[in-house]
Length: 258
Image 1 (tube, one colour):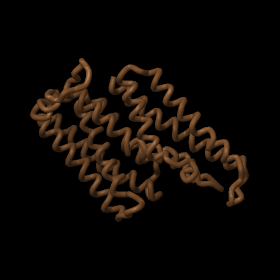
Image 2 (cartoon, rainbow, N blue to C red):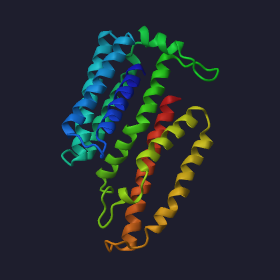
Image 3 (cartoon, rainbow, N blue to C red):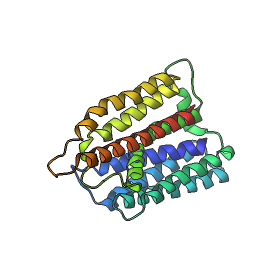
């Protein structure tokens, strides 16, 4: 799982940098955001391979796959955001890269070098000390819950046409999702890896209860004259699809982490 873990860390940090640079309050050119975020992911992948002792020819092949995948993901996801690239194509790049590295993970070299020694020296909470590869994998899974998870949710919504339904704008109605989504995914991942699956399910149930009043209030027509049934259908679709995709990202990460 070493190659897969490196790719997760690289993609997670690249998307996090892209999210920070694309702040709506301080707009920057899209090409600058894409280039800087992709360069961050590539640099991280190279540094992790070199410091982790992953220099065997097969490791370098995996590095090439990771580099191409990170760049392609950042370019296609940015294009999908501007409707220049189909959202499904961007999701296919991300899924294809990770699935390919996961399928080839049996030939990965064990994590070594200064990176492994540093991870072994970290004072981990609890009695169980993870292996360096497991620690790197958990770090990658944690990073993916942040900006990458949000990006995946938006691309899925865009691919099915639920991001801007006729007569309403759900993304403006259901506020706080950009922050709530990562928080709930991180919480679900942490509880799941700790073996508290029941507590993780309570988090999922709690979100539905918290959001229900907003969905119920959306049944009233607003100033744009949208029909109540159209508004409630659009917002419900947006909420349900977005939430289920977000939960799937977190639950899939729990499965990989355990």
